[in-house]
Length: 433
Ligand code: PGA
Ligand code: ZN
Image (cartoon, rainbow, N blue to C red; front, top):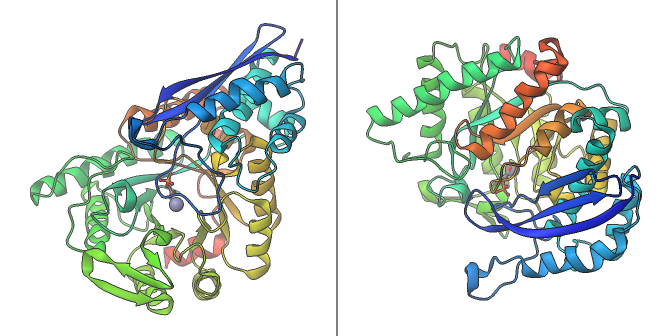
């Protein structure tokens, strides 16, 4: 009865108004699973391809070809397959598309299918998705510590500032609810500060305030001011997390901070980021150097890896092989996990497991183009991975993920919140100094 009776892909629309792929999987038992592919804007070169039709219609972003792949070869290959075997089904998907980056089927087609299969298995078992994941992968379900964006930037804000995400974390909170409360206070305090300076200009793609700043560092200063205005002592209960997304402003080994009209090499950028680490209560930094700047990532981790979480996103693209390579290089100490970068649930979990085997922390993450799909909240809880990054604290495609964690909290109990525990003691202690 847990065999697949039908697979159907349809076009739906994501938070930026672009088309994307939704897949319904129905089992012989009648149980159904549904998932939607998210879409990134600052995509890594080595991540699974988001298959788009090109041309003039829908600004080239049509997904007709990806849907044809779901409703054609994918549906044919999956009919009669048993959803109890996620790895087997994901193996069929990767077997259908042996290209390295899933350019034949499209990562958008495979990820929506793979996640819909997982949802169908949970529905058939009458289980919440997080619980099925915890049971199946033998993990302790826990509510993650969120990373929440306050100012958006980079590719999510027309490159108004160079740095992409200015976020807070609340590792000092006693519960997930407390994180939400503190975030509400900081988020609106930041909006008030922008308004009082005449800089309030709406929100960026992930719901963070639009970054009307004269320099990248002004965003950091404003974030500290917002934390203070919210009645918090920066570095105490609330700390800062940055996604530099440096690949976005790097070319041929030169980093261009357009807002400040500055061009620099890897070493200078490392020095600049280091000076921010000395000045602001930053405990986590993502993609500090570009995806092809291996030497830079190694040097950055050598200098700062004992005091901050250094996350590879574009640098690792949720690929177990790249995670292992970076671990042996000592080029990061944490991995961002985006299921659609890998293209299937099993490959994403393999990357997460490889990161944990290296002693790294892991952060399950949304994309900048999102929907009402809350699969990542369930994956983060079910895998007990410790951290979740979803964007900001506004707009329903973001709030849907935080709210889903609150519903899960009602089943798991408030004690299931991981708090600051997964943060490596070294850098948390350093941030306290
Ligand atoms: P995205 O970027 O626009 O590719 O989703 C998000 C991130 O860099 O973490
Ligand atoms: Zn990133």
